Length: 376
Image (cartoon, rainbow, N blue to C red; front, side, top):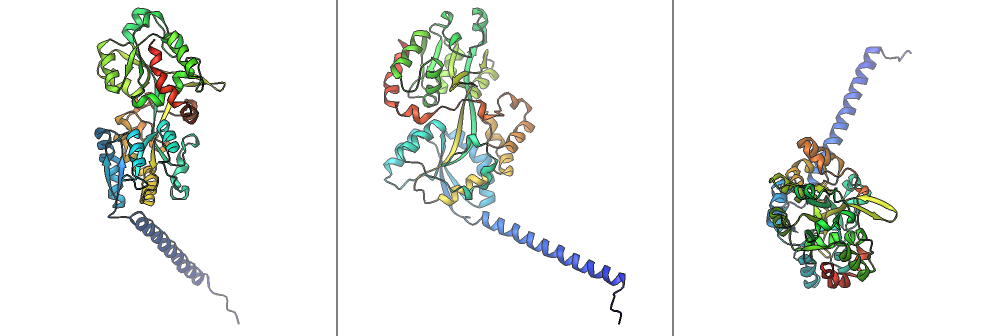
């Protein structure tokens, strides 16, 4: 008996099997997509409290990423104007029952928050998008939200009159023509803890030798005074009272320039550990609050923020203060939307200096009490 089937029969069988395979694959894929969608919305109807910075900054977060996140997950975000210092104080005062779940913290204050025991630890498995973040920016407390470049902002008109070169380091900061025209952050300024370690090294000092470092800086640079806020710094530069601010956020300097003030940004040359860096990097981070009962919601938020879709929704946020996104796809989206952003985008964060903040914090009391000595 010949049971060999004709070729037409085999072809039809293959088509039926092929169709069945496609159907199974489609069913499996559809099921996976449905499951993912359901998973993303598993906390729909709930809320988390986000302690950001100023109301204006929070509004940018809310209108960009916040809107995207709530529409996608069904989770609402309560936006709280605050600061890292206020957050540390309030969380400690809560007795283990914080009223915020996630907060913005620059890397300097993150080190302080860890020291104070107010920072939690996320589960890496819950944030698979973390693999998109450069290793140098990865943290255990959460994720980087964006990174800023800190250098020096100077009045080009005054520098031209004095025939001075670009103020990349203390060799120019200490020029006699700049005596009484250089401004540093005060210990009450948010920028102080970010910048003070790099300023100390730039003067030839160290984190541990506080008195020696203060003496080296004060003997070389004759300062105008201190700024307590970015507004103080902007006003002094605009009025022409100050010709150089050390440790100025690049975004602030660019904003002044766009307003017609004759200023420009200078890269900050910092030498440490036998390596030369160009500028100070200050990553802002989304940080989990210790003992937050909404840990899983916060982890979902962090993973979503690092997605390609959220990056596109967050473009107004990144460009608001010239902050470099934490992923390459987000950087590409920013540069496609505004090619001029190449002026401030940080392509390789490892080339910028990130201080050893825990080492600096070991002598924090001495630094804060002696800092005023740089004016003498």
